[in-house]
Amino acid sequence: MNPKIFDIIKALDSLFPDAHCELNYQNDFELLCAVMLSAQTTDERVNLVTPLLFQAYPDAKALARAELADVERIIHSIGLYHNKALNLIEMARVLSEKYDGRVPDKKRELVQLPGVGNKTANVVLSEYYDQAYFAVDTHVSRIAKRLGLAKSQDDVLKIEEKLKRKFPKQRYKKTHHQMIFMGRYMCKAKRPLCEKCPFELKKYCRFNAYGKDV
Ligand code: SF4
Image: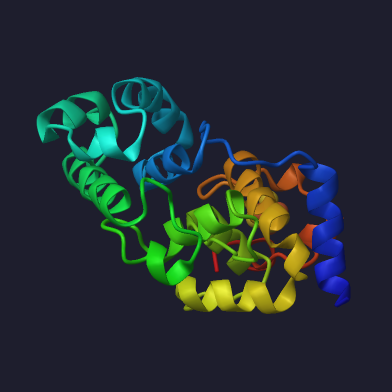
């Protein structure tokens, strides 16, 4: 294994051995809804609204029949709630009509669902179906750039491709969660806690070297 990747894996394992998905869910349908709701908001906020949402609409068939205003009322505390409510209902309609209420386990089918993009599909495939996908969100993107695993101008698809090339397949899911934890709790966007960052990461960090973000 490349020594840099070895160092990064070792450091992330010691910092965040139990990194995991922080969205609460019980099944494939709930996970997909929660991931769709999590765009541009925190998992914490999503976890506040999903208990009521899943109580009112326990499966795709129920959500497909929902009134838009009712779903909006439940999720109004999170950003972009109008579009998210529309997408949730449409997504549920397709799930119940085409897939008998189950979330498909193929990327080409997932990305055809209303409101489901590349990142959401990757999260579901990796988290629920244990497939080798690497979801890149804002935290993963920032950490990858700061650690020189991607270039500053790379878009998310490029970053995803680079991370998949560099890390062993069996590490995609864990590394994805660890990079998110790193971004949330240590390498924050504005004031990263560099004094707590281990040497194995610091030595590759561009933010540190240039005193500004990459
Ligand atoms: S040294 Fe600071 S900016 Fe660099 S990876 Fe560590 S926490 Fe992030």
